Length: 308
Image 1 (cartoon, rainbow, N blue to C red):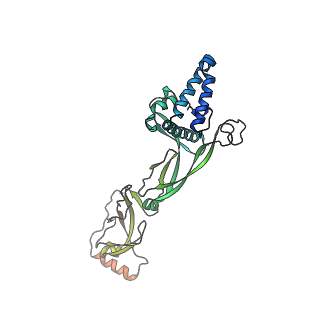
Image 2 (cartoon, one colour):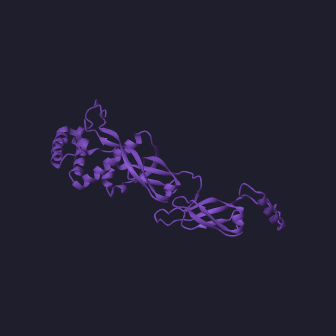
Image 3 (cartoon, helix red, strand yellow):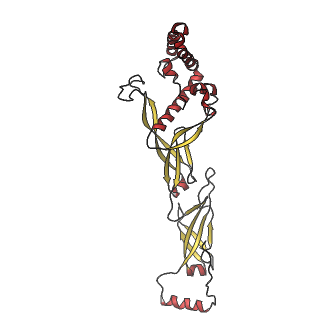
């Protein structure tokens, strides 16, 4: 894997050094490693010093380099850090705002047009109610920061052990938009990916933006028609009209009581499958009425249908 060139370390300056400090460091090192002084042994170091100064002496290039440097350090920390599932995505020079030539210098000419890098992935489980309304979750990832104790110059540093970097938790509030799909992945900047799982619901199943449930209706209400009160996923109870002669398995549609479509907010429907049940307890009068009903109908049933 290519090694990132740390121009600040090459010039032996702090990342917050001002332009005068950078210029003085460059002049000092350039004199030290100039081929006329150091001979052939110092040629590579002299080239590296000039390359570093070319970038850090230009405010625009330095700003872009700093962004790349922070991103690289963060990616390396996540790659090594514990507690995350590793996922792969493409990282190419185009991701750095056309900074291609310097990008190649930083990583080497054999870096290629793209490569794979790792970012941590966390999984969060949300309820169907939270899919309806949207929610906010807290995400913690490991952030890499420069060691303020030794800046990587002390192998015995109790804070970083001489690496110059320390890993600290970084917390984000991540918005889960209404209508989020099960398995959807949200990018948290360049820091992490958040995979969303939708927990099973005891009363409803999801079909796209629609919600599907089973509605218990008593046989007398299904036969004569009537009304039943139902509790939707969220919000106040609603009254559902049961048409006369409603059979078992009939689907009733309640428009606009489903889930919002992600990005538009347009709501799907609530689909209720009628399940007939007898009222309990049975009375002698109930038995008499059902016997009379049976006597008035010759249909005895007996057909077999495949399960739906």
